[in-house]
Length: 252
Image 1 (tube, one colour):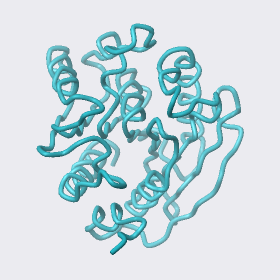
Image 2: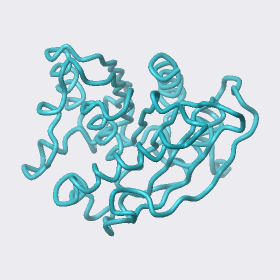
Image 3: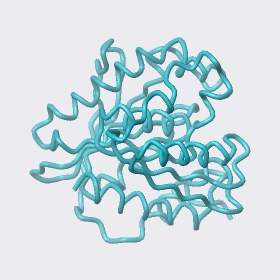
């Protein structure tokens, strides 16, 4: 029997929503270069709501990213899903450009998108976070390390970027200090794309730098554990619960 298209989401979101309706709109002309388009998914209500960037994998925005943002919006978070690869014609085959030749521009785009969220009357400008997946997880951590946001969550993040490519522009060891924003690191112990050792190395570095962080790893779990053919129900459900608790603690 074929699994429903959003099985991930159906299994993930088991608790009662804070709001019953959401509003969706497409936004163009975002980023420092005004070349980024995004989906803005807002809770229905007066707000002000915390804002969250939802940052996609090296595969670009997928239905899972939109569905995740929709469910997070039902929990009372205003979500912006930027197509940040498209502005520079980056693909799954050229993903390395995002952390090297275009890294500064992408960071500038994220900064502008964060400001866009802050400028929205229904969004609390003091409470902005980011949730990223794989490549997006790397960027969520960088934004938190630079304190451009108040909290960052990495799902199976591209934590090896600075190790496998010497041209990587931003390195965790250069970014994180005791003044950085809190981060949540979620990683599968059987991840064949980004070895779990990188998550543990990052946690060790954060601890030494007196950073606020949480690390949770999942046994018998690989990359992309919350979506598609890689779905691992228990890890997906637990990571969602941990994300909600983390965002509530630092953005509510």
